[in-house]
Each structure stands twice: as C-alpha cells, then as structure tokens.
Length: 277
Image 1 (tube, one colour):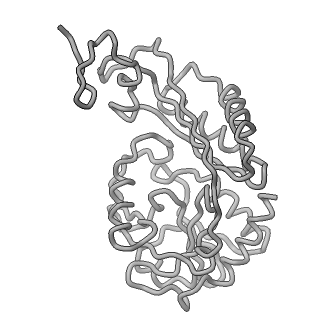
Image 2 (cartoon, rainbow, N blue to C red; image 1 turned 90 degrees about the vertical axis):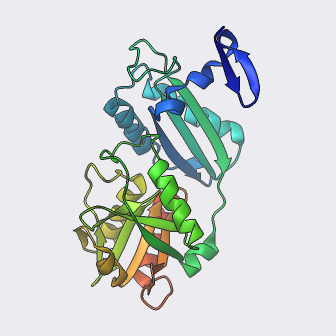
Image 3 (spheres, rainbow, N blue to C red; image 1 turned 30 degrees about the vertical axis):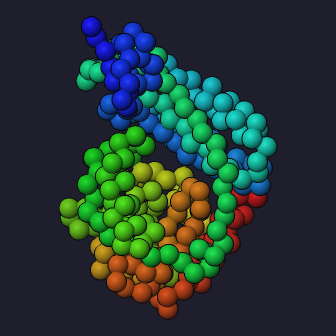
C-alpha cells in the first residue's frame, strides 16, 4: 500500500491533494512577484509583469500567459476594494511526484494573495538599522525565484541583532543588496548603487529611485561598495516595493551622518512620491 502522512494523519496516495506534490514545495521550482498600490492605483504594473514574464522564461516555465496574470492581478485588486495593498503572486512548474527532471506537459500552479499595506511614516522619520551578512545565495539572483532560504536566514540574523534588514556582502567583499531590498549610498552628493548583474535583482523600485535622482539633478554612480565605504557614506537608504525609500541611520556599528535621515534621501523620497500619484 502506497501512502502519505500529512502531519500525523495517514492519507492514501490516490487521495493526496496535488498541492502536496507542488514542485515549488520540493525544489523551490517557481518564481514570484510582489507589487503594490497607492491610493487605489496599482504602481508600475507593466514593469512588474515584464519582470515576472522574464523570470518564468529564465527557468523555462511555459503555459502561462502574462496577460492572464495581469488580468487576475487587476481583478483581485478590484475585488478587495482597498486603496493600498500588497499583491504577492507566484507560479510554480506544477504538481507531480518528486523527480528532479520535470515533465514538459506539467500544468503550472498559480497563487495570488492580496493584503493591506499600512505605511509607517515614523520609520522614515527616524530611519532604520541594518547589519551585514555573507551573501550565500545562488548565482542567478536576477531571477526572482522561490529559492529564498539564504535570504530568510540572513533576515533572521538581522532580526536577532535588533536590525531591520541584512545587507548582503559577496565573497569579494562587496555589497550586493539587502535580503528583500535594493541598497543605496549617497556620497559627495552622488547616488551610489551596485550595477545590475546576475547577482542583483532588477528592482522595479530601484529603477524609479534612479529616475527620481535624475529628475532632481543628482549624479548617479554605479559602483560596488565595501561595508567600510558604506559605513563612511553621507547617507544610506533602501528601496523596497512595499515601502519605497527607507532611510538607514545605523550600519553595523556605524552611525550614518548625524543619526537621522539625510536631506538628499528626503529629497528623493519626495520626488519618488510623484510617481505614485
């Protein structure tokens, strides 16, 4: 007799819910996307759908029409009736008995969750603390895959140190990004951020931060920073889908600037908000 056990309950194999065969569960074999709305309007929907489609193509998931995904996102958002939400959605390769090799005829599984987003102006007013952590992720972080265990462990490390985010440092000693954020420095009036590569997620929020910097006449330097250089920056901040720009006032043991969000970070925040209206 073939059987399964779910928690402490035996289930005949033929009665096992297909969700327990999901390849996303066994292998992280899927990709995801997160977007948000501001005041009743979805933000950067085109850009998010384009990235989602690129992630699926990169890991060879087929059978999903991105136009259908977009329609589902819009329909779910409308159904909530909420003005400010976070929308999480993922696609896995599908459900099948565990095997590293996949069947090309698998039907992908889709999940979407909508939750309300509450902004935290006090966090932006005071800034946050971050700490560094080795970047232990795989070599294709430009794909927004479900393989997030290194991110989870790094974020838990930061939480246990009393920090809000972990900033990842690669084997060469350079900062890549946060566990769920893009990382920026400001020095000598210029915006500094790591160039996009296979080790960096093409953050949608990063794209709009760069556009905001251009709009306010701030020079942009694509460069890889060491933790020492970041600790010596005039200002630091993160870019996060659900929070846009978040000032950093403590980096490891170093206080950034005078310990409060800097003027250029505030200027970028003001400019960024113009995109969301």
